[in-house]
Every structure is written in structure tokens, then in C-alpha cells.
Image 1 (cartoon, one colour):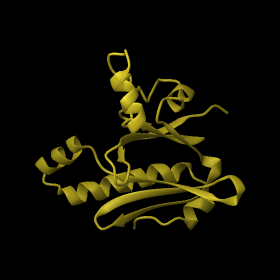
Image 2: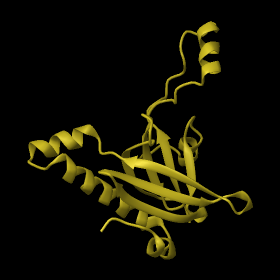
Image 3: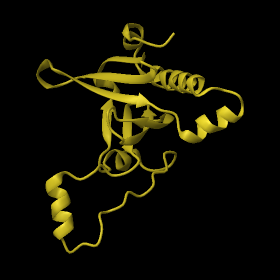
Length: 166
């Protein structure tokens, strides 16, 4: 059976940082796709300053509906989470910020966690505010939709053992 696109979370943030990602959920994996290239490390930045190249490469836009999934996964900064490796998942409210954590089985019995902040696009917050919906309510609705999308592709065991918003 071919891998199918299930849905898109248009914007999540890396905790403690400003890196923004979109999240493409498929029938076999979850892809975190950077909206822009990560900041270069100090030594890479120095090499860029003294190199002959004019500027750093730009990320080409991704068409989440039609681009090849393997090509999207291979992009610089992309993270692939195979659904078969997911041990635990949760979406929770931490001091007014909605966080999604996906814990994976990793080599040697260790686990690896991916944590993202579920931050709705500013256009959504502004549009809802004009309609009389508070930013707090917009964040909650966005987190619930993201939660529903991820729960659709996880196994029933992972869903039943996960920690979810009410």
C-alpha cells in the first residue's frame, strides 16, 4: 500500500528557539519540515563570511500536496519520525503553551523525544480575533486539531496510553 498524506500542521515552533516548522502527517511517518534553514553554527558562519560564495542557499518552497515525500524528508533540517518507532505521544498545556511530545524507541533501548510548540499562524489568530474569538481560544482549537490529526495515524495502543487535551 502506498504512503498517503493524511494532513498538515502548518506551523509549530522549536521550544526555546525561533525555528518554525510545518508538520506533514502521512500514513507511515511524521515529517517536520523547516520553514527556513537553521542558523549556521559559529564555525560554519565564519566559513560563509570568508568564502567566495555570495550568500547561503535559500530553501525552496515545499508544496505539501504534490512534492515527493522522500524529497521532502531529505531536505536540510527535515526530521522524519517513523510511526512504527513511536512509543508514546502527548499534547498538553504547559503554562498556557500547547506542547506536543513524541517519544521514539531508539538504539540500545534508549528513547528519543521530539517536542514542538503548537503555535497557530498569526493570520489565524488575527482573523479569529476579528471574529470575536480570543487568542487563548484560537490556541486551544489549533492544539486540538493538531492532536486529532496525530491521533488518527497512531496505533490504538499509543493513543490510549497517551496524554491528551480533554
